[in-house]
Amino acid sequence: MKNSIVKDAIVLFLITLLSGLALGVVHELTLEPIAAAQQAAANKTYQEVFPDAVTFETTEELAGKVEEANLDAVNWGYGAVTIDECLEAKNGAGEVLGYVINATSPDGYAGDLQISVGISKDKKVLGLGFLSISETPGLGLKANEPAFKDQFVGKDASGDIERIKTGTANEQQFNALSGATYTSTAVGNALNASIRFFNNISEG
Amino acid sequence: MNKYTERIYNGIWKENPLFVLVLGTCPTLAVTTSAMNGAGMGLSTTAVLMLSNALIAVLRNIIPEKLRLPAEIVVVASLVTVCDMLMEGFTPDLYASLGIYIPLIVVNCIILGRAEAYAMKNGPIVSFFDGLGMGLGFTIALVLIGALRELIGAGEIFGFHIMPSFYTPCSIFILAPGAFFVFAALTALQNKLKMPCATNGDGNPEIGCNGNCLTCGFMKPKKDN
Picture 1 (tube, rainbow over the protein chains, first blue to last red):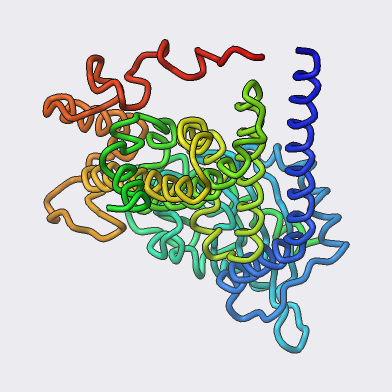
Picture 2 (cartoon, each protein chain N blue to C red):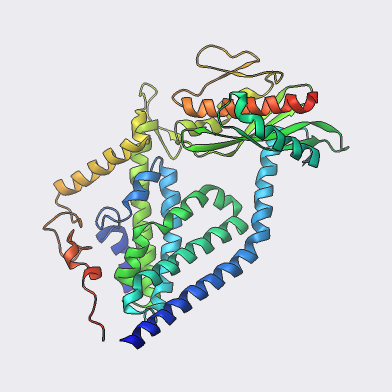
């Protein structure tokens, strides 16, 4: 009886040990490809939201400002939004054309919703894309379709962009997604926080 | 029909994991908001199920009788994590569409159910085919439920609009309650037609556990020596 317990324990130990080793090996093997794949996916989104730029780089100064902004972001009135990253969008000659800002709002219907916004130096929204969205298919997930996303192109980024439910949106407004109030609110919060951050950095 | 194709037929029709064995209902209710989601979850599960069945069958003579569950869970969880990492690293496009379902597979009781009920008693190759059949059966069931919910709730199937323009989609069907409505309606239909199902009380005792926990292998451990 005692022997069988010891034997069982040793077998289970060996199985877990081998599984652990296998996991470790695969983790090492996939570390670089995973990082590269994530970078490639992010770059694709950046290119969509800022079509004219060629390279996207962050600087230490911008990273510092992101950290600073997040200390204060809860007081901006856009829910528990956070600014994740800010990158300089540069053309082939290395000239800064504007910024790509990533922001997360936790106010979506299915939790966190992360957007990426491209804003040019002359304060125009160039595009909006989603880095992470898990809203309900058929309702909130429709935000990730061109019919919703493309309306943001050319909006005025000097102040808040207001969410409206009916009528035609002007330069400071966008049309909410029908039946998806949470999603629309979360997109609005993340977008307006990005715009506010943009204005903070471009003024100071 | 040889024993391999028999396994596939068994998984798809005779012992369909969802409709007949009634396994894996949690992920079913959660992810069938559209036919595409159902297919994604089903195919990811199939891949893991084939590998986990084969691996457990290889280890079946080594795994101690009393420690079956912990040993199986360790193997299945490691396998799922390995799949997750490999997919994310080497097939990013596939990962983008299926990735969110992978972690959900660990908690899918079809995997553990088949490891326990089949792979522990049979050879690796036939267990592999059992996994393939069960996985395909699960995929078909998920696509069926997903398509019905998508059709009623959004007027589309696989993202293509099919309902006439005067039809107003009934959004509740793509929300959580819709999952219960559709699954309940299909099960009711199955009962009405007296089709075999593990939860039909006096059904066939050879299916699943016959809705009776007393006959379950977990409840009657072999006497240890």
